[in-house]
Every structure is written in C-alpha cells, then in structure tokens.
Image (cartoon, rainbow, N blue to C red; front, side):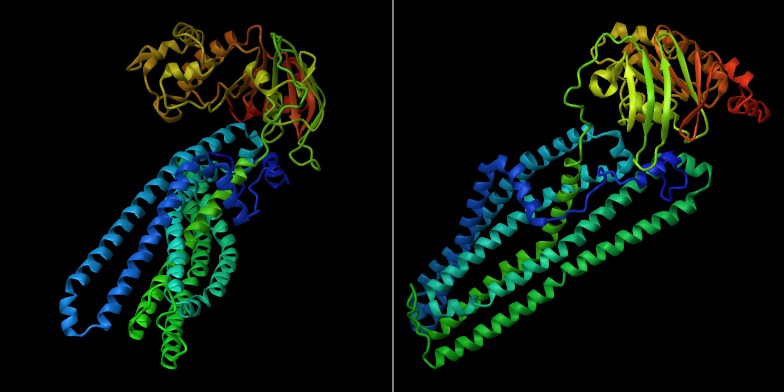
Length: 628
C-alpha cells in the first residue's frame, strides 16, 4: 500500500518532513481568470486560428440572420395593424411570403449555429485538448521525483482527464453559445436603434450597468470553482490510493476507517460544490428580475412617450405606420435582447469551471522541471566508483535527513545499507540516482561530482531492482526490453536465462509474448522479481541498487533470485538495502544508518565483533525467529 495515507500516520519521518517542507513544487493558488483565458488562446487556440475565425464568422452571420428575421416579423406586425379585414385578405400572399422568409432565415440561422459548433469541436479537440494532454504528459515526465512525493497521483490524473474535459466542453459548446448570443445581442441592439433611435436607446440604457455587475460578480465567484476542482482532485487521489491498496485494507479490516475518511473528503467536496454553484446561481434570479424590469420599463415608458407624441414612428430606417406595431416590435426585440444575455449569464459557471481547470493544469505545466547544471556533461565509460564526501541532505534546509555521510564503493563490491525504517537508506539510493539533489557535501561517480553529470547519462549506468518492482500491462518480452529498448529478441531471452526467469517463462501460455496484466497481476511476487532482474541484466549497468530485492518470496523462488543476483553483481558496484541481515553477510562494507548518520561500518564479522548497534540488530532477529 502507498505510504502516503489520509491521516499521515503511516509515513516515515523523512516523508513527513518532505510533506511539511516549503518546496515550491506543490500546487499553487494563483487563480487569475483573465490571465488564464489569455493563456488558453495564445498557447493553444491560436494554433487553430482558421477554425476560430470561421467559428466567429458563423456566429456573427447567424446572429445577423436572427436579427433580420425579427426585423421581418416587425414588418408583418406593422402591415397587420394598419390593414382592415379586406386589406388583410388582399395582402394575404404578402403575409405568407414574409412568414416563409422569416422561417427560412431562422432555419438558415440554425444551420450556421450547427456549423459553428462543428468548427469549435474541431478547434477544441485538435488544437486544445490534443496539445494540452500532450504537453501535460510530457511535463509530467520531466518533473522531479519530489513533485510526486508532494502531490498524489490521483490528483495529477484529475488534471489529465477531468480538467481537460471541462475545458473541452466549455470551448466546444459553452464558448460557441457565448459567442453566438453575444453577437445576437449586438445585432438586435443595432437593429433596434436603426428602427427607432429613441426607443432603442431607452431599451439598452440599463444593460451596461447590468453587464458590469455580472462581470464583477463572475470574478468574485471564480475562486470558488477553483477550490471545488481542488477538492475533486483530493477525492480522486484518495480513491485511487485506496483502490491500489484494497488488499491491505481488507486484510487489516480498515473498511470502516476508509469509509469515514472518504466521508470527510466527500463532505468537503460537497460543501465547496454547493458554495460555488449557489453563488453562481445568484445571477439567474437577478437576471430574471432585470429582464422583467426592463420589459416593464420599456413598455411603460414607450407607451407614455408615444401617447404624448415624444416619439415618432418614422425615426428610423423603417417608417412604421402603426404606433402599436412599433411598441409590440420593440417588446419582441427586448425579449430577444434579454434572452442572449440570459444565456451568456447562465454559461458563466461552465466557463468558470473550465477556467479553474485550466489554471490547475497550468500549475502543473509551470512546476519547476528536473534540470541539470549548465556545465553538466554526459558521463561515459563508467567504471562504477561511487564516493560520498561529507554528504548532507534535507527536504527542508532547516532539518537534515542525512548528515555527514562518507563512504566509497568500488566495482565488484557490495555495499549494504541497514538500519531502522526511516533512517535514510532509501534516501541515499535516491541521491545516487539524482532523484534528489544533495544539500551539502558531494557525491562522486568515478571521481566526478554528480552535480556535473547529466541525469540521463547517469541513470543510463544505474539499475534499480525494487522489492515491489513495477511491470507494465504488456508482454513479458516488452517488460524485459524496458531495460534497453534497442535490444534484440535474442538479447532479451539471454537476459531472462541469466536471471533464471526463462524457467517459468517457457511454461507461460504464450511464452515471452504472454500479457502479464497491470503491474504483473498474473505473476507471482517471485516471478515479478525475476523479470526485474532480467531487465537489469539487459540494461547492463555498472551500478546496481537492490532494495530488498529478495524479500516477500517463497524459499524455492528465493534460491533462483539469489543465484541470479550473484551473477548480476559480478564486476558491478552494488548497493543493497536490506532489513533481513542474512542477505548481506557477504557484503564488502555494511553501512549502519540511524537517524540519518552512519554510526557503524565494516564487514559482517567486524561489526559483530564490535558488539554495537548492528550486532544488537542482528541478534534480535534470531530472538524474534526471523529467518536469517
């Protein structure tokens, strides 16, 4: 099960220090909607300018068609009110023509709305989501290990899936509607002013105030959506971790505790979701009230001004013969003016959610990458001499995890690291691989400071075999070839034979082509270890790190593992992290680590004779009946 738990009780002291550190790798809270919108356009949507401009054209043209159709409906009303019964009969053909024209225009408008949505879907998927997912995955591979210690994998997964989908939906659908309704609002406004300048100004006079208030309110609500998405990430991280550790949870009967912890996180998410949506929905009743108020004001003021003769029916491009028709047309236009505004306001929560999601993604994209020093060089022809000189390391500079570490390891030597849990054994291995940068002192590879060596060339010469190795849901051959991707099939099979893995592979259903399932679920622990060792043989690195590589397996398989490890360690520099001291009795040098310091070192016999910490630890395993 992952060491990182909801309560943090199962974390090693060094990991607790890591989480409590003030490193700037954690997710930032610098939400700025306007800057986020701008970045989405400049970094992604601008690459699909052709489709963006086509979408804008379709939105604009559709809005103009909408306004034109309303204009023709106004003509129908004017003709109707100024005609008697006989005139209506005589002009029936004209009415039908105008009605058919209006219907045709509305139909054409819907066609342009559909084409607009197609343009935006292509823009969203091809230029935004495709590139955004690619950039995010590429960035994740460049982030230092420290980032993944500070941020749960489930939360990072939320950014690559749910957050990207939120942006896609907003751009492909929400933004399309926003553009269309915005242009419709502008087009209807222009037509109203052109029909009758005075009534047009009265109708739109109040809208700038309403728009300003809505925008300010939108900016105020935006952080609540950012917080909501953050809680979604926490929930996903919790569920992902618990699913990964479901066997341990069942074994220790922690289902009730998990349910309680989930309930707390779920409650936080629910509260934040309610808050975000409750605030955003304040706009809806406010919008309805404003629309009704503007309709009443237009009707009352318009009737009054027409009655007193303050407004003429010929103040525009169309000389209306009927004052009643003019007022009815303007009330219709008023409704068609407020409807786009309603739709734009109702789309704000979706845009705010998308903006919050985009900001969360940008926080990952902006995280500091793993970088080599400017003068770092590729190391070649590695011999495998590793030397630590007064080495210090701390996740927080105020608290050192490793203190004054000194040792030298040479080819064909085994250096064992032993000590209590959390003493710093795995941290030393992480420094050798440059997963973390040393704080003080130095670590030399063949006499060259690790700071001056590029991470890629260093790791090319280091292979790690873990207690719980990771395997991919691919074939056995592909998993072994991961040690060296350009290896031939023959080289892969030779590596498997050296690792004693060929013994079980040949009995698999499809041999080397057998798919082993997610993380080797179809294999035993020992078989997974043998594949990891085969991978190490294929990599042929000069420095080997074994982290409890032969534990948690049956006795028969352990003999195969031990045999393959002895072959693997020949002519290589080997660091062996072990709790079972029986596995390190042949080590050339045993580093006994406690509280981040080397308190003893020497061979097994030398340390037993000292009768110190190591001797007590070794003898305690006899007393507890531990297999040694």
